[in-house]
Length: 233
Image 1 (cartoon, helix red, strand yellow):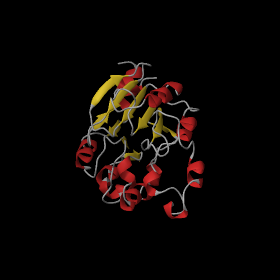
Image 2: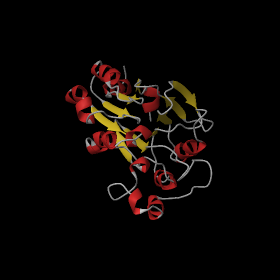
Image 3: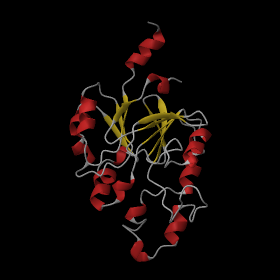
Image 4: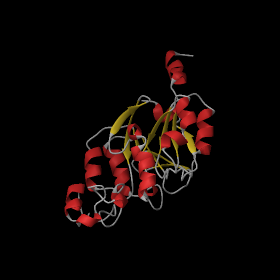
């Protein structure tokens, strides 16, 4: 086998996991059945305990755990703190990270009509404007209400749209799903991404967007090992 093939064989697994909704056992089993690599949770962990404790066997085996927020991760203070507070180093949200030889961007959360429905003109373009509209009693820990800590703002698209990345990890779906959003298609295209991986709708499927970007949707606690065709430059 040529040198290129040898290099591919040595790549650590890059695993994406669909919404756990408190059930991490299938994800743990899958990770412990393969060599350690990188695990990316695509939202809705709804952690009943700190994430590092829930995934302790995988972390002890050498897995690098990353995550983005889903809507259920901001429903209670415990769910938020057990994820955001317990494992801040794993946060992929609203940034581009070099992971396993790829540039991976995270678009956490969901569209909410009070801010932006993802289709119509937004009510607020950024968090500063939204915060200025709130009453003092609506604030949580001196900032955005807990419920809006995972709300998508137009400024998130503006920020990520200036970047170049290979894969977009989002909780919301692109237009490949009937409840998805063409705005996500456009973001992936602007960044010249080769693929989008998403959760939220609990459906396992493969698709290709009209702009040629590949899509992988994940079911509940489903694990998907990114294939070589996604990883090849």
